[in-house]
Image (cartoon, rainbow, N blue to C red; front, side, top):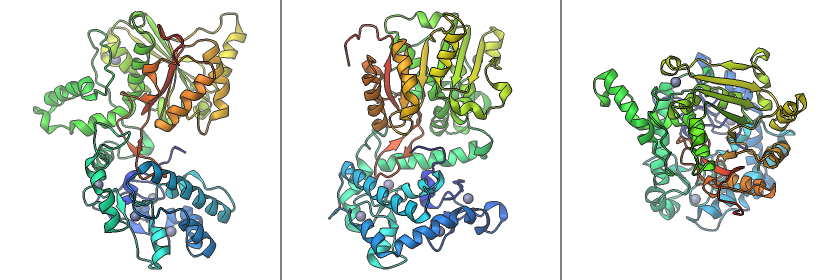
Length: 493
Ligand SMILES: [Zn+2]
Ligand SMILES: [Zn+2]
Ligand SMILES: [Zn+2]
Ligand SMILES: [Zn+2]
Ligand SMILES: [Zn+2]
């Protein structure tokens, strides 16, 4: 479900193209498809229709057909609630059923399953916060082709179908802490943050195809400081950022805005910070791991666009652990096949920052393009004791309870059987709870503080849940489970 190409929230308000998801600044309006009313950019001076239209045509025709087919129309209206509601659990369930219907209708009409981009356009359609109606449903009900949702005047990212429905949910939207959001902020406040962050991202990362924005403070701590159990990003990196900004611009206020900057950085920093937090909690009462000469981390199900792209940020592990001299990272996953062959298999000493270079510290990466259990068995077959346990095995956003169930089975078995210290993270609560159950069923004894619960060191970049009227997901947003060592927690489940 959380495939790579997720339209940004801003696509809902005409700030990003619905086909290629390129974000637009407010000064340049997007063109709108007259047939299905999706927004598109005018790709590189070509008229709007050229590039995007080719990929849009099939879905557009299908949506148009469904909207005018009596049987399809009836099935789309069937599951709507009678009146407005502020119970987002109920509404989210209705969204799921309705999206399932719509997806089935579209796939049948296309005579093939939708591709990822098409599916995302459908599941991220704006919906009334009080009843889940979409623009399409309003057009069907009223017969008025110009009928559509209105948006919240504060954030423009929440929608309602009528004043009465807005009245039923506006207080909650504006004033109550959003479920699974952060900092006790309301959905409206979080949406505003998302907009600010999206605009900041366009400035910092104008060409998403060529790389990711990554930043980590260039400093080495004097000693290991255990991480708090609550998010404390500002305390962790904000002070350093302000000092640097002051040095650079003479005044901290003249540099980049701290909050969006830290938020954008957390997308990459959540990887090393979650590793540190996992090690800290799997080794409670024993800080031997912070003083090892070589620390070895195995990253399972690694992908090119996440763990490999953000590779540099793993140096933060060395920066928080001044006594460790060498950090060895094994990045393991079938997705790494797409890396050039020469980059696979061997250990490569990556370039480290000047501070680490001076102290002759090393960050060694090894990319292996296979499933982890195949890697372990391969190591074992080479020679007896050919496999050495890592200090931590970690699977980021694995999706092992949803889309990738089968492919993770063998790996989970080996992690549990070998008692390898392991942590799994996920995008949201639902996945975290599902994955914890899978790991428990496989025989793992879970360390309670490592999930299922929100990850204090997950990315602060929130994205709205598809197919829901409320809720967000984030990279490493939840800790699913930690197990393998679990000192003093025997028997707890
Ligand atoms: Zn486009
Ligand atoms: Zn269209
Ligand atoms: Zn409504
Ligand atoms: Zn709002
Ligand atoms: Zn360094």
